[in-house]
Picture 1 (cartoon, rainbow, N blue to C red):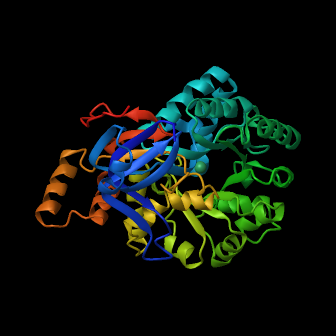
Picture 2 (picture 1 turned 135 degrees about the vertical axis):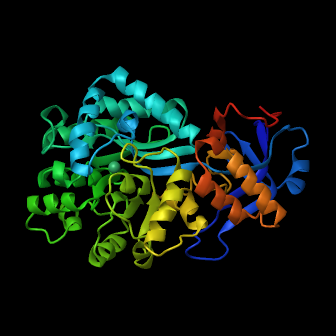
Picture 3 (picture 1 turned 120 degrees about the vertical axis):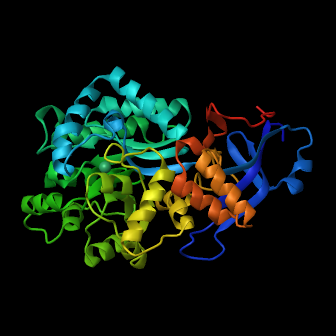
Amino acid sequence: MNDPVYLYRGEVFYFKASPLDTDDFYCYFPDGLLVVSQGKIIETGTYQDIKDRYPETSITDYSGKLLMPGLIDSHVHYPQSEMIGMYGRQLLDWLNEYTYPTEEAFCNPEYAERVARFFVNELFRNGTTTCMAYATVHKESVDALFSVASGYNMQMLTGKVLMNRNAPQVLMDTEESGESDSRELIETWHKKGRNLYVITPRFSITSTHGQLISAARLHEEYPDTYVQTHLSENKNEIDSTLSLSPECTDYLEVYERAGLVTERAVFGHCIHLSDSECRRMAEAGAIIAHCPTSNLFLGSGLFDMQQANRINIRTTLATDVGGGTSFSLFRTMGEAYKVQQLNGYSMPVFESLYKCTRGTAKALKLDDKIGSFEQGREADFIVVDYAATPSQQIRKEYLERNGKWDLENKLFGIQTLGDDRNIRATYVAGNRVYLSDSGNHQETGM
Ligand SMILES: [Zn+2]
């Protein structure tokens, strides 16, 4: 093999299956080696076993740090990057007061590009290498994000928001223009490089039944696109939805009647679902994106992970910035844990981490490309410092003294105390796209 090979030494970890399905669900090499060539994973294993096979190759040494697949954020609004953490009441007021005025600016391509660039770099700084993002109603907003992502050869999923009612006039499309703009964007971007298109009706309050039908028609025409929308986030939202669709007995039915509940559809929030709605989602193979920082911030409610697990719905974790208050999926995992604590479920750290990596990749049918270190996967990976703060350091020393510095405690510390400060480096398709300033590791291979 003549292509250059890159070796990374550290604690190599990835999921090989769901912790909900089996006890043998991960690979972990405490002194491991990750082998990358042409932007793809060649192999992983213990340092001792592998190093002699590549005698000529220098090694980037991240010893003592965790090398794991990049995190995947399954629900985030890139145009809301600037309006993160804005004081407000609940969902519907917050949309009117902050979101819609902010999104108006994205008709300007330069503006959209500037925010898209900030957004993608912020993802990398937080260890996120793939996201499924909402753009705005403007085609320009989608062009901007796909363009920036293409510059990094990053796996990006996004799409133009569809909204043809109950929104400011300047932010509305029509059934016809929404469909034709989406079709044009699909033709331009879908499956070009690592870009994938997501048909994006914001939610039922802002899309007529006709527009939802046109979204489903597009999805049928391009069956390997995705669908994303919001479902059952807030009680007032549910009431408004049902008063707009009195023929439906519950919220999910609004999307079912349009044909949008499929195994390629990601529904944000899903906090107040009935067992019947959950069962129907599971039967359809639909995906839930649970967004705990957003749900707490907007006071939307406590998502019931046990209900979703019991009924076997594919569930992922997501930040939902700007309703969410952090770009960090580690922070998001920590808040998901607290939300489940209030529901009487102490969710294992392996479950939450799976739902930000391989679990999300699998739900999105991208597990042959991302989410693990199996051979041939894209080399999207992160280097995680277990002790990036004094408090993490003293916790580490305490656990070491007590012989409890094991994988589960390490990961639980990252989940509970970690954030962007723990990300030492981020790689996308084999290229380093982020390196923290505080890095004191030795680099010999790049
Ligand atoms: Zn959202």
